[in-house]
Length: 116
Length: 111
Image (cartoon, rainbow over all chains, first blue to last red; front, side, top):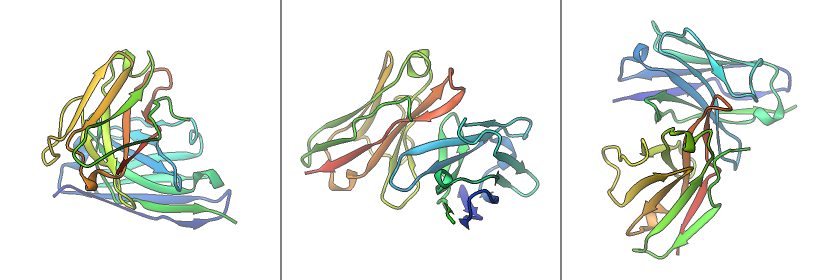
């Protein structure tokens, strides 16, 4: 079945970097655009970034532009999110999601905590 | 903050009908972009509930329905059940922000 599994979360100090991964299975990964969406503790959903099926471009929310980078390796069926210059407000659960014009399915999420 | 506004909470008795509004503007819902709805159970990832304004994915009960008009959209739950008590989010695209946007979220409580 279609499945997305995130990994790479953890506790990191402000200003440091972290790379998240999202392993896809059960569908032709290279045919779909992919998103990252995050959710701060007790808060709502916030879209982070999108990358088209071929990785030819990337688009970001203003809150992460210049600090985060989305990429993909279609040979490994894997999506990435490189997060640099992390801030306390970047703390939350990060989800990857497949784009079909809407977000479906979603991974289970990986928790990123930015704290000294 | 989100450009799509939802009521923080709605409630109803079992079996009743509740609606959740999602109010946007001329740069998102009013510009013709589709609205999608997600259900998020506590401690889990969001799940697609309604796509492209009115469509239910396979497996979603027909108690859930969506509509869109002008700069707003709505999610209706008829025959409210205890298992429907959770959080719901609308989502669309905003051409001014060039970003995908989510609603502020609504907590449904079954009395």
